[in-house]
Structures are given as structure tokens and as C-alpha cells.
Image (cartoon, rainbow, N blue to C red; front, side):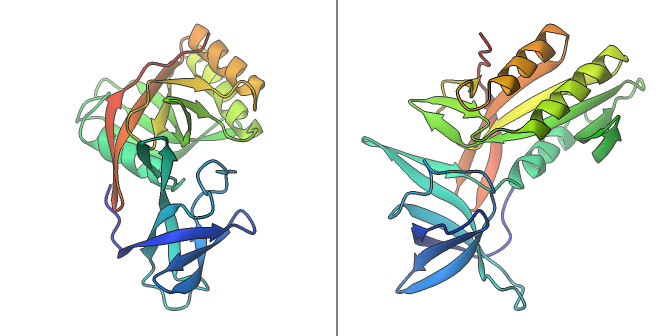
Length: 233
């Protein structure tokens, strides 16, 4: 997935609420839209380098969207895409290339099932239907990536609905897209929301396929890369 707008570099200053950040671009302070409503406190640290996409809409109240940041850990610098809308676009491109279900599979976005709406439904050539839910992951510590960074009752609900779908004969998948490179493995964030981890473990036990992939990140693109281990114990 490539961003179409002009990408600029800035220095993060502050985030007064979930949607807005103040960033220094050149010698000017700009109010920017944050494309992630999560806490992201470990990412948006005053003084860190961030990357923004410039909007071509002159009627917007914010000229830039904050899409990526650099995270320093000792001598290591991680470039992390934190655009919460990007993972679905990346996974859709990946599925359309024939990965996981083959090139002849029919892919639909935002499909309702029960009381939930899943990110994708996939109908294979033989008529088998599967549902796939995508979770973007930006929380990292010492090479271990975790989700969620804040309690997500909606996420738990989606997992429970996927279990139901599996019990009714559908294929059911959860794909954790890690929006960075270099992660060792994925775990649920047990400290922040143990119920999510318990639901994920229950889903695996009942046949839901849990996948996790890392990404190649540049300031202007995000590409699904390699599978990483999922640890639920």
C-alpha cells in the first residue's frame, strides 16, 4: 500500500486529544489529524520524528495526517506505521494477490454476520465462505508485539462472533498485522485487557485460525511481509 499524498517529516510536540496532534514542520507548528485513536503513548513522545501525509482537500481544518513515527530503543530505531486505516488496505491487496485463499477467491469488505461486521468475507472457488478480521498492532516492547493497547470490548465481540461462525461451518480467521519490522513474536496484551487474550485463546481452541505478519514500513508505504509466531500461553 502506497500513500498518494505528499509525505513530509516533522517533530511531534503534543497530543491534546485522540484526534489531534501538534507537530513542528520546518519552522511552523501545525495542527494535524492523528489516524489512530489508540493511546500510542509509547509512540508519540515529545521530540520524536513523525511522518505526515499532506491532504489535497483545501476545506479540511487540518492540512496533515500523522501516519508514522520513529521509536528509539537504545541504538535501535523502529519506523512504525500507526495509521489504523492502513492494515485493512494492506491485507486486501495481499488477498487480491491470491495469498491464503488463491487468486480465484471473491473478496468482500465490511460483511455482516450475527451482531458484528467483519472486515472481509472470502468465497473460494468451491463455494466455501470464510470470514477474516484484521487487527493492526503498533505496541512493541523488547521485540515483542502486543494487542490491544487499550481495552477493546468490540474486539472481544468480534472474536466471539468468529467462534460462532466457525461453529456454523464457515472458515474463521484473525490476522494481526504488525505495523513494523523486526518483531520476535506476538502476544495478547494480558495486562491491559486479559479478556481479549482469553477470547483469542478460546478462539484458537475452537478452530479459528490466528495469524500474525510483520510489515515493511517506509514513510510513504506499508507492505505485508513475513509471518511471525503467535504465543497465547
